[in-house]
Structure formats: C-alpha cells, structure tokens
Amino acid sequence: MTKYFVTFIIAVFIISCNNSGFETYHFFGLGTIIDVTIPKQESDKLSLINNFINKISDNITNDEKSINNAPINQLVSVSNDLIKIYERALFYYNIDNAYNPAAYTVRHLYGFPEGPFIVPDKKLLEQSIQNAGFYNLVLQNNKFYKKTDLKVDFSANAKGYIIDKTSEYIKSLNIHNFIINIGGDLYVSGKKDNKFFNIGIKTPDNNVLNVVKISNKSVATSGNYEKYFIDNGTKYNHIFSGINYVPEEKYQSVSVIAKTAENADGFATLFYLLDIDKIEKYCKLYDLAVLILTRDNKTVKLCGWNKYE
Image (tube, rainbow, N blue to C red; front, side, top):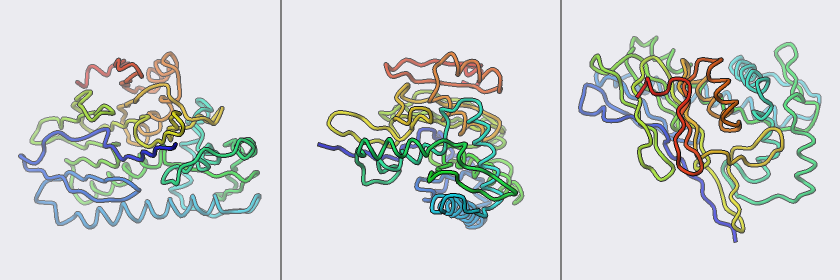
C-alpha cells in the first residue's frame, strides 16, 4: 500500500509584521507559496514584483525543459540566468558530488516533484543511474549539450537565485526594507521600524524550532518533510544523493544563514546530504551559520548560529 504526502510547508516564516507599517502579501508560483512583505504604502508595486517573479521563473523553467527534452549532443540555447544557475550548481557539485542537479534523471522516475508517485523498476533505475552524472551536461559557447540522456532540476539553488534577482528588482523600485519568501527560503532587506525582523523556523510538526533576527541576509531550510511518499512502510524523500542516487534521510532539516539567498538555498541542500563534520568544515570556510534538526529531535548549532538568535 502506498501513502502519498506532498506538502508545501513553509519551513521559514515571518513573525508578526501586520501590526506595524508592513503588510505581507501572498502569491502562488514556482509550485509553492510566495510571500512579499513590504511597507503598506508601497502596495501599488506588488503587481510589478509578481510579474517579475513570474517572468524569470518561467524563463528558467522553460530552459530546463529545453535541456531535458533535447536529444543527446544537440546544442541548446538558454538564458543567461540559467547559465549563472548552472555555474553556481557546478560550484556546489565540485565541493561534494552528493549535490547533483542531474540526480533528477533518477528522481523523476519516482514521480517527484508532483506525482504520481511510484517505486521504479530496478532495471530502469540502473539504466538511469548510468546517465545521471552531472559532468555529462556540458556548457560550450553559452550553449548546453548532453552526453547522455540525463535530466536536470536546478531548483536546489534556482529558487534562491530568483529571490536574489527579485530583491535587486525591489530595491530598484526604491523599496529597501522588505522580505521576500519563496517556499520557506527568504531574504531580509533592511529592518522593520529600525528593528530586526523576527524570522521563525518550523519543525516538521509545525512548531517553532528557532527564531532569528537578521538584516540584509538570507535563511533557507532543506528538510525531509517537504515532499515525500511512503510505499510498503518505506519513506521516499524528494532529496536524492547525487552519488548513490537514493533518497537521503540524514536529518529532519538543515537551515543556513548566508549573505545571499542563492548561497543559503544551495548550501542548505548540500549540507542536508553531508555528515556533520563536513558541514562544520564548510560552514567555517564559506562564512555560513547552520542549524540542524537531527532525526532524533536534537538541535545542532554550527558556525555562529547563536549570534542571530
């Protein structure tokens, strides 16, 4: 018997802005909830912000489809945004191959992200794994080609990239104190009435795990409770290792505070796939604060997370 669970839990959320001069407005896009918190007097610019998010996300989605549907060795033209996302994904992949956007070659066989969900045939999995090395996607003169019939999903850092681009756009509208939150990954610009915004991080059962105060920084969370299904008592999480191509279950969640949303987004996914000793090594190296919720409900705070509480 298969049980299906596809949830869009907002793992990171804003605590109480509506009693101030700010208002949080809600949209739906990128397959999740988008929250934009801005001063109430700037609400007339919401349609511009929403249109910007939709345009850039549609372009990136179409670029991914072009790559995934292309025959082997055929050159594919894509946007500059997708090239930048690829280059950042390659950066994380070179840190540790567990971060692999081409793991989607295998992951999509299970039905992620939207279903229907199924445990694939073993022979089909073995064939797909042979195609799924990220090095089989080649960028040449600003065009891509595939050496194998792989498929890519850049969502592990594309969402953060879109947040950063949208933040730049909001600032160009002369709004400098705001929050943009896409599916629990968010960037905080400035402050609320000269005070830090309070940002809450939730547990899988929807309780508050931690509250941080940040300004001009981003926080993102990767977790095993966002999208998953259970088949015959086995849980299949949507985050797959790019090395052995199986769902990873090291932690309940990993949250990262970084200077940009792309960094927070990408490293949160990478760290979810790594052991704690590696996480501590890399968070020191790349100036990141990390909060881990272990599978036995213990919290681990690394690289100065406490200073944001």
